[in-house]
Image 1 (cartoon, chains in turn green, orange):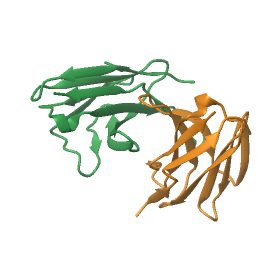
Image 2: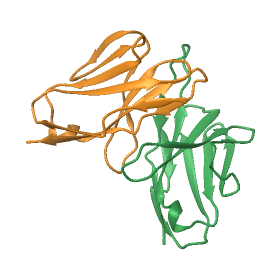
Image 3: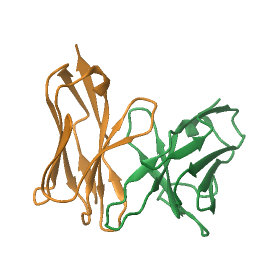
Image 4: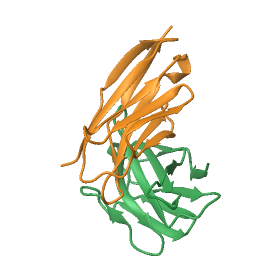
Length: 118
Length: 109
């Protein structure tokens, strides 16, 4: 299957700093990528849809000025958590659909990035 | 609104069979996924159903009834490594993935 990578896999930062997370599709092109956040013992929560060459679409309640998304190429999307605070500590996961002929579009997930804000 | 329900936690014995149910109410339906997620890791694909019936893949099978808004994941010959969370996700009419909260499966020796 297709491979999606994320970097870094974990990061610890001080409150008030910014953190950038990269999501790459390694063997396919992804015009769309999804960013999720998962708190302990909870399900995945879609934060935003990253669109190559255009602005990201944010879910209700997600601050677009705090979570900056850039989809610079067909294989790279970045999520920057600006002025991070302890409540932003979470597991951030990206995914990319590998489109097929039918409506079936399996999501391939990156390995996730665990962010801890002190 | 859109809603997906699955049990929060289930416990089963190594070597046994377990069925994890998922019911959904969504705006449209374009398929249902089951994913496995081990603690601290990203989800991995298990199955996809878009037509009614049972799909079998090794020890895992997935069933769908669109008229009832119901699916289940059946795990046979349980192994300790099957201890994980199992996520049900439905593709709605806008091809958005709607996620259930996941079922934590605990396997005991």
